[in-house]
Structures are given as structure tokens and as C-alpha cells.
Image (cartoon, helix red, strand yellow):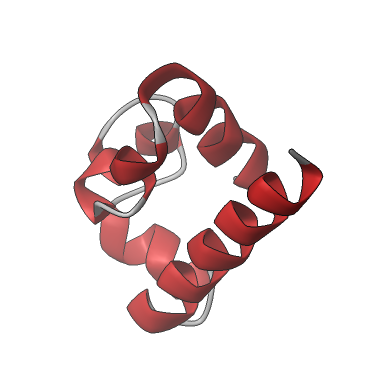
Length: 62
């Protein structure tokens, strides 16, 4: 899941990651609905927290 988010970041930029509608698109749509994906993280807020942590890790590595 996180590797898919990283690929989207590389292709489309950071603003796309913060928009949960990205989960309606490939490759995430193969996992399930945006709600189901968020639930895999423990809910929408936990998903958004994971995205922010991924963003932070990207910028720290740069």
C-alpha cells in the first residue's frame, strides 16, 4: 500500500497523496474501496497520519 502511495507521489506530486480520492484509482482500487483501505490503517485519520509520515520520510531523505 505504501509503495503504491510512493509511486503516486513520484508520478503526481505530494498534493495527490493528501486527497483520499486517489484511493479510487489504480493500483488502490484493486485493494478495495477508499473506506476499506482507510480501515486497513485503522480509519481515515490513521490513513492520513500514515500519509503525513510518508511525506516526512520523503523530505528527510531528500
